Image 1: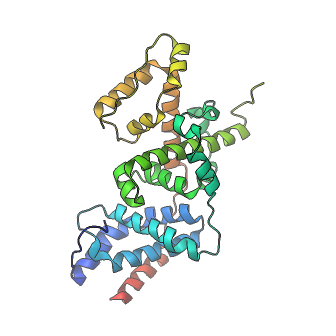
Image 2: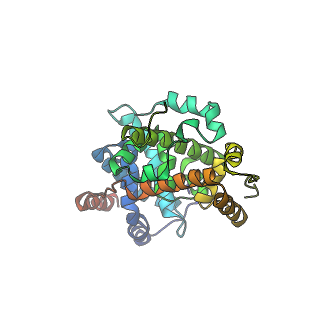
Length: 199
Length: 93
C-alpha cells in the first residue's frame, strides 16, 4: 500500500508489473467503477484515470503484494477525491439515509423487524436487474462495502486498507449495508407478491 | 477472533425463536465471510442445524450473496478502451 517504502523499478520491470499484475484486474475494476458511477462512460474514464495513476506511482507498489487491493484503493480514492467533484452529475448519495441509519437503534440490534418476512427462496426468484437496482439505490458508502465483500471477495483486512477505515468500521458498515439491501429486496419481493401484507 | 458466538438453549422452536431475536447477525456474517475461526464456525453450524429461525437468517444471507455474485450482469472494458490505456501508458515514458 501507499504507506510502504518506495521501490525503484526499471522501465522493463514497470511494464512487466503493469501488464502481468495490474491489467488482469481490469474487468473487476471496470465493474467496481460502474457500480460507483452508474454510467459506462464515467466508469471507463475512472478506470483509465486509475490505471494512469497506478503506472505513475508504480514505485510505491510492492511486488508480490495484493495488486488488486492496491488498484481498488486508488480507484476508490479517485472516485471520492477527484471524480465525484468533477462529475456533472450530483453524487447519488443520500447522506441523511446514511446518518439516520448509523444513528438508529435498528443499526445496533442486527436483525431488522421489517426483513423477517423475507426468505431465501423469494430472493432466489428475483432477477438480476432488480438486484442491481436494489444495490445501486444504496448510498455509495454502503454500496462499496457490499461490492468489495460479496462480489469481489476481499477480506475485512483488505477492505480496511482499501477504504482507510478500521476493521471494526468495515464490519459495522457492512452489517448495516446488508440490512439496507435486505430491506430493498424485501420491497421487491413484496411488489412481486411473494410477501403478502399482514391482515 | 476471540469472540464467541452466543449460546442458546433449545427448548422448542418458539422458545428458541424468542431467544434468537438477540442473536448477533454480525457474527453470522463473520462465518459467511470466512472471517470466523473454526470454533465459531462449528458452533454456528451446530446452532443452525437445531434452530430453524437462525437457519432461515443464515440461509437468506447466503442467498443474497449468491444473487449478488451470479445475477448481476458483469461488464467488460472494450478492447478499444484497453488499448487506449496501453497507448497512454506508452506516451508517459
